[in-house]
Image (cartoon, rainbow, N blue to C red; front, top):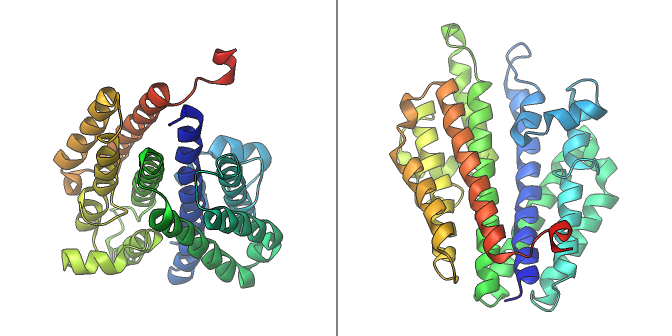
Length: 314
């Protein structure tokens, strides 16, 4: 497979997954703020913390208000992680490889981008936001299912799975980390019941609530939720499941030794962590290390299979 094609497929998958995940966290945060008392609700800043683009946000907005955060995450083209920017990037990556992916997938990506752009103003309103985000999530899931069900499961599809699962593992750990840090302080035991609401919101951000209840069969609380989202091998959005999927795809590719070593380290670190015993600060340090390993795996994948950046190529 040509290295440029492999790179386009990889980033196509990552951008579609990024758009879906961003839509999820905005939708769930809006519902969470309705469920919590005004003085306890975490507000909108945690959503920017999840993306890690605080510096970019603060360049263009003066405060972390609802209107500013929603605009930044939904349609700000200056933000590469906004839904509109991610779908545009997915569309461009797909356009260059239209002979590799099914025509229906290209049409679906194009239609979803056009919907996101044309209905953006409606999505910015409180009344129109729910329907707008629901359509985006279902559209992204349709693309994922369409590609899985109609592409040849050859080397190109391996890069698609790698991109999707790396992006998914990245976002799952970010959501758990930031939401854990923004939960109620331990010195307010009278407000502890609200913790359950916030951990339910973490699960719902990943459409994980029902599967958590089925798998864990205990009430929603910090330790079991963290174990489920980080270490469950059977839930598709759990970090361990995502890394296993990446490793399975890497094993089918040539010259995979260096990448498999990094992926193996990721899995060992995940599987051995006693997450329930980690304080919020320790969990943050653990997630930081995990994020660094994801970045290392991406760099190894890029240096092994993708073409060099244009500046280096010149």
